Image 1 (cartoon, helix red, strand yellow):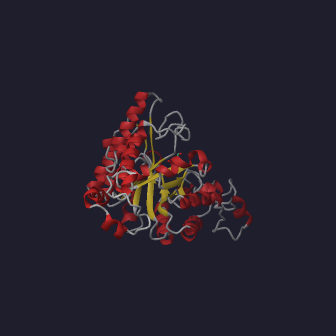
Image 2 (cartoon, rainbow, N blue to C red; image 1 turned 90 degrees about the vertical axis):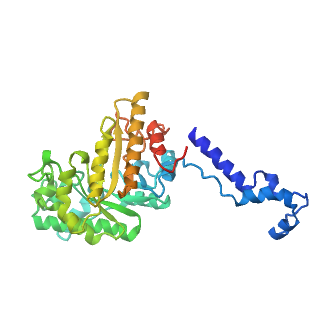
Image 3 (cartoon, helix red, strand yellow; image 1 turned 90 degrees about the horizontal axis):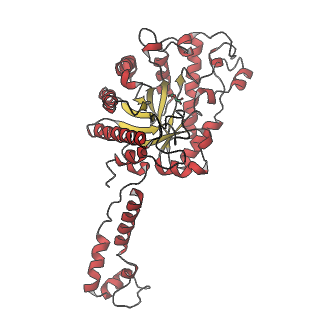
Length: 406
Ligand code: GLA
């Protein structure tokens, strides 16, 4: 409905610009002036009748209200979507993706599990002992898609306890081998970060605007005395608690200047101080640019509390991005979707208010395209239904933009 109204408004504006009607392009004296230049047409036209047309031509067209997320947030922040490899280039999804988003994140294809090549790393030993081998075939598909569609990309993630192969941490690159020493693992970390960043820097200059250097390192429930994750964390087991520091140190060394370096985490509104405290030294040394709030939320969460955390991160001098936004509800009923729509709308309006107060919020990425393609199946957390029709969440997300005027 809204889309229709905007199309009508745009059409009206265009017809105004063109001079109201096809006949208004013709001189009013009825002579055929097709072969005459503009000067002749003006001097020979009857002044009384041409005056309104001239007014219409000089008047700027009425601005039409944006009807897609990409247009609605143009110049405010990037609007991103996480995509699995299977959807990239899929004709069914293509229009919705390219209409609405100007940033993508690979759901998996840039994770260590996907880019590290076990067979080649093992086959190359001992040469590969501190410099493993890579395979960027799947990441390349996503990067090419982004370039082709004039989109940017978030690179997610370099150093993470999860989705990183066990063999990467062992002496012989086997799953069950003994863990390597701190020094060897730091050398492997440097090699990993250097290779991935240089791959994108060399092959896709300007594509990556944000890098999740470290993902999910802080959690008091599974962490050491400082809340650095110990559980199931081979980075901690090999390097120790300062693995976060070294990851940022190497990332800064090898990243292009336009690749902003981010720390990315879940449940940020409940561990704001924990994150700020653990990142303080890294920030002090200029090794980090921003914080990514994953934002896997529920419609029963408090938007106010979320925004308070966002404001605190920005106030501490960080650039801020919402990197994995999805908002779960109990069912796909009309009332749940209404509540969810309000949540998305309130969240976006709140972010806009923070930006007006000076907060440096530069990207909002939803973690998936539709409720049929989400890791939270049964929670209906995204902006589009499985059939790709827009949900109230989409409408409210759009309507919260200050560029949307109707
Ligand atoms: C975390 C990770 C994401 C993704 C989600 C679950 O938030 O950062 O890459 O794996 O979990 O899908």
